[in-house]
Image 1 (tube, helix red, strand yellow):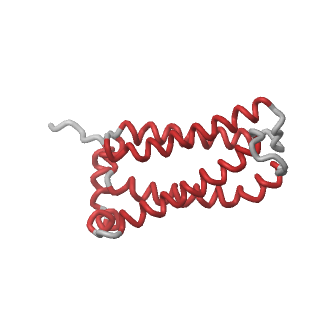
Image 2 (cartoon, helix red, strand yellow):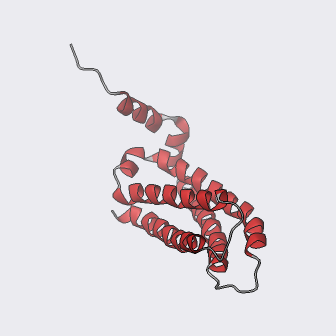
Length: 158
């Protein structure tokens, strides 16, 4: 009697053979288009967070941090959704290689930490730029997203 085959390899093989995923691999324009969308999404996320974080850190004096955060948050979320949707699509094109890539795994961990940091900041109530914790979170946000971007670039080289 043969030992049972784990479900994960069967599911990965089924995903690998799924028509939309095959199309992503064979269409010469699909993956570069997804990469472009991914980078635009990340630019929106980092660009909007950068401005709010700089305001929290006191580098953009004269701006109302609360108003600024409310105005850019929809753009931040739109960028995050663009990056997440395009990233997930690219991930499905070659799951095995991505989950074996340490730069990809670290990027996903950092994205989770960065998103948790943002959720915690907003869950605490109105942004208080005078709070030491808020300033630490803003500084950490900038560093985390820079690390996410760096890991994203390293995926191709690891």
